[in-house]
Image (cartoon, rainbow over all chains, first blue to last red):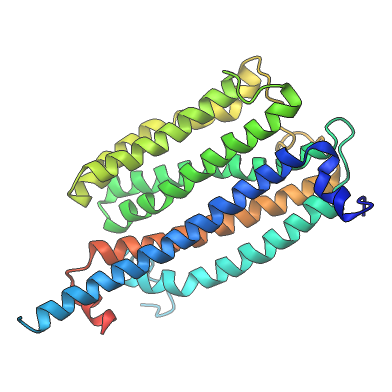
Length: 59
Length: 246
């Protein structure tokens, strides 16, 4: 282990903005893509159910 | 006929692939999570400080995986697209469309993390260098693919048009890969190649390779999830989708 303290770890030898920026951006993109796909699936399923319901019972 | 022969073409039907993809994605998601955990641990706690670049070099643990994914996804996407043109299989175009957004995101991450590395190391966020410029063109190719896809209403025609675009754009991938050899560029050469022994500490190399494999597993997970969405949308008027919902 080459970090002497927690603050040492977060400082990243003076490169904190660049290192945490890179990892943070990547994490945000990954999380965003997963959440977006989940929301997309939910909305597709909802629309399909609505279509099915309106077909089944003529209003 | 031998009953144990696997009928691969069975899975070329969207209906069967929808079920198969639904069974497969949790495995790939688990692998991606585990590998990313190990890879990140090595990236921050095992790999030593770089003699020249200090702690700033740790950006490569996301930059290299993102960059190689952006190129590799493009090749796989173009292969699916070409397969679709040649054999007229519906699933191929759906697979190509499922990969494009993830490829675009990796190309964006490659450029963004590269800029975050370039600022402290080169003193510039961006330079019009061969490697960077050809990677930017890759991002534009992905965006062009997505724009073309959404501009054509008939999905089958959109698949064909996009397949042609994807295949023409393949020429850019070797240009990115060899750009550091062909031109004088600011970007450093490959640290890992098939012909030479790697020029980095072995724990750095292992961390990077594990992160690369984690990204592959992630990309497969996402492609399977997205292709399921695409199949549901495109096949929504078929009987099997209606049955699947009930």
